Amino acid sequence: MDEAEKEKIRAILTAAAAAPSGSNSQPWRFVVRGRTIEFHYLPERDHPILNYEESGTLIALGAAIQNAELEARAQGYTPQITYRESGSCVAVMELEVGGRIDDASQSLREAILKRHSNRKAYKDIALSPESKSALVDSAISGDSALAFSLIEDREVMQVIARALTTMEETALGNKTLHEFFFSEILWSADENRAGKQGLYIKTLELPPPAQAMFRLLKHWGFARVLAKIGFPKMVAQTNAKQNASASAFGVITVGKTSRTAYLEVGKIMERIWLSATAHELSMQIVTGVTFLARSLQSSEITTLFNLQERERIAAAHAIIKKSVDDTREPILIFRIGTGNSPTEVSYRRPPEILFN
Image (cartoon, rainbow, N blue to C red; front, side, top):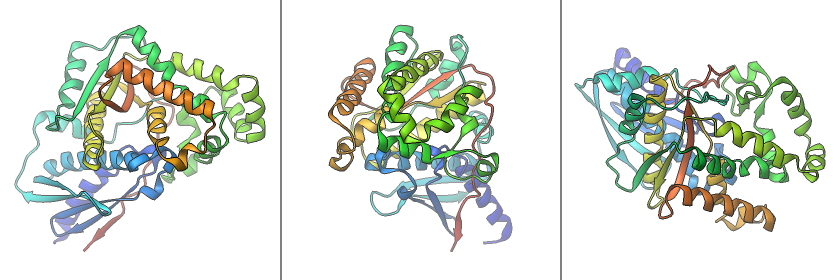
């Protein structure tokens, strides 16, 4: 392979590595063999408490594969994807020379490096028919087991928003979740710009007083005292109002979970997010409680929570399922709307590429 073709593949994998991942874990490694790219996943980078069936890791890889497909077409290739059902390699992309990118896909491709989480409050503006149509079209998949819904009914959104913030309520009152969450907070701009795993404090969009409170809350002794006087519930109620300020909630559901299904969820999620970005809309994943609810199917995870916490999580999950589709499993939930630009964004490390 000559250097010019290597540069094209680096461009493809730089786009792949711009995909979103939980706490910016970037759980991937890329192996290149000629014009074949292997996508390897690294589930150990994601915390098992929110990674049941390695779903978070696989969804992130699906988003990375989607970005790589878009960039491959822009680089003059036709990508052919084959999924692997076992082993660390989750997918193989064969690059056939001769391909082009259409206008719709080019619009998504141009949004790859502009796409970021925006945790600010959104404006009370309904989605335009054009934006709504673009979001729905971007979610079309050849996998009939997956479905995408846009929820715009304000009353339903408020119910879902409060159920979703069961995550925050539990995290601030449970020692294990508290330690996990605060261990992943990045406090300095240097750590963030280096692409370190974690959530940079400024991306949380907390007002200055709340940022100061966060530095105290990272100490479990302080958080435990506040939990006794109902502070976690107060935070959850406040966050629920902010989440409900969106124009809509987007929900991706599956009929049956599997490794391939999670990868496809990631691809759909990324196309929706890129479409939202292209239409100057903001988006934020708010699906922690659904991940947590699935994790409680593991006996090891269940023991980390008391009965009241388990019942609260199960009730929130049931409310979300009833609000969306009782017969299917909600895998990803995100809020979409019009918001001011985020204060800060998370940076990525250069992709880890092994040329063989």
